[in-house]
Length: 270
Image (cartoon, rainbow, N blue to C red):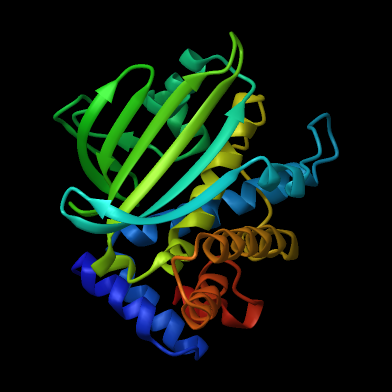
């Protein structure tokens, strides 16, 4: 489905659960749905790690989410007005290590997803069961810019050392205003990227889950997702880029996709 149409559908449909599910099924082919699909896989791993009884560290979900800075901006871009979602976090790892975790296929599949393609500037990538895109810029170990699921959906990763053994990572995801409609569109992708930032931290600290036993629809998983959605609601409200009605509608949609109640799972996934 055309990426612009996907966003217009999810911004205008009503709040009935079965409608959420029908619209999301239509959106699965769009790169804009991909952060959600990855997020649901991640929650299983986080739930599993946080309840293991061996030597694994207990995950403090609140601390993990509070470590992420979130911004939503509505601005003029090269091709017209756009909405940008900006996520920032500092990791206790050297910049070369973080870059390697973000770009090396053998490491990516251990915390994110398997990736294939012509992995170089000017090449392309395919995340297994997820988004594909073109690699627009690749400047190790500081900058990676790609299209993500569509030519007007741009993701840029920026890395900066913070001393010898710490790295600040920024992810900026921009789409035209015609797609996002307002800053409230951030609620459809922001929680998914939160999940990736948490998973990267776990990986860099040595917490790798090969076979998570918990499900994405566990109470703990839904709680993590709900807190992430709430954090993005606050970011959108603080940005002044969307009205109260737009934010309320997108919050409902975001919760239905990222944190569905048990009886809504079939409608969302089916």
